[in-house]
Length: 50
Image (cartoon, rainbow, N blue to C red):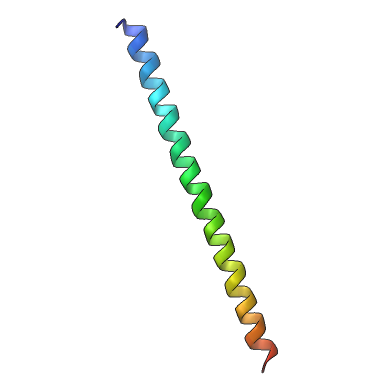
């Protein structure tokens, strides 16, 4: 494999790893947002019952 082939492969692997990392961050953010909404509604319900 030529030097340019190795360079292309390295860049490709870096971009794939970056995309996977960004996807995992996006999923965690969505999970945190839904958990926050659940907790906020729980607090509202408790405040309304007082």
